[in-house]
Every structure is written in structure tokens, then in C-alpha cells.
Amino acid sequence: MKKIFTLSILLITSQLLFAQELPVFLKERIDFCNSNFTEDKAILLRKELNDLENYFVRKDLLADKSGISYYAVYEKIAKENDLHFEIDTSFDLLETLEFQEYTTCFYKVLTSEQLSQLNSKHLEAAEKIAEGNDSNITPGIVAQKIINNLDASDFDLEFYKV
Image 1 (spheres, rainbow, N blue to C red):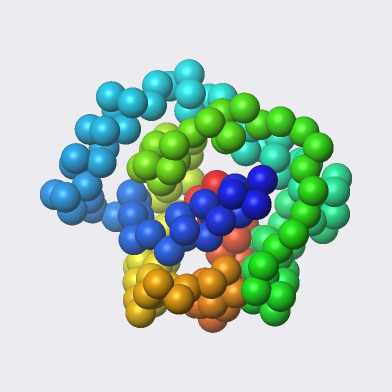
Image 2 (image 1 turned 120 degrees about the vertical axis):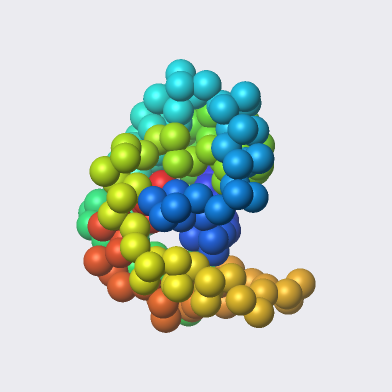
């Protein structure tokens, strides 16, 4: 399940903010998603992500479902340069989704209202988080960039929880 948090970190560093007007190059990604990610998969992913969040709260990885808890996890990753935890349950879709499907189609689990909460601050933050990344990037470096550019309140948005 460390893969889930790694995917989350990578997702945040991506510059895909679907609440903004979509650039032309995103059309290919949307077409990919429409042909590879069904509404049923989106519903199952939404359920698994909710179950995963509940699991992390039960296991004390997250103190609760608040943005400050998510922010604290990133602070811990930045400090320790990693995050180790055991998982004793299965999230079938999350385990089998390919990286391209997850990063391209995650927006399908969000409502229009949830997507519309994103603004230019989030686009600027995504650009700063993604800039200067090279082959020496570590979880700690990415987590530090995230906490330097996003507030705990940003993690109250469903976009960042996904």
C-alpha cells in the first residue's frame, strides 16, 4: 500500500487540474480515460478510496479525515524520507490499476463541485512541486515540496485526498 501513497504524491505533482479550462494536449488523456475506465470502475475506485481512508484512520496512519491529518503525514514523510506501514486488507482495484489509468482517470471519482474547488493557487503549487525533479528525487523531497506549497486546508479538498 506504500504504492498508494507514492501514487498520491505523484498525482499531486502532476499539473492536471481539470477544474481549469483544459489544454488541448489533455484531450488524448481524456479519450484514453473514456475508453479504458468505465463508470463502474470509477464507482468502485471511489468506494475503495473511502475504505482506504477509513483503514488509515483505524491504523493511526491518519489521525482523522481532516486536511491537517493528511498534512501531518506529508510532514512525517519529509522528515523520515519514507513512510513504512503494514497493511492487512485488500483493495483489489487499487492494487490492479495501472499507473496510467490511475493518474489519467482519477478525476472520474470526483464530482464537478469537487473539481471546481481547485484554483490558480493549486495550479501554481503543482508547477512548483513538479519543477526541478530529476532522477534523484525521493519521497522526502517531494513531500517537502508539497508542504512548502500547499496548506493543510488544501487537503480538506477531495481532489488532494484522492
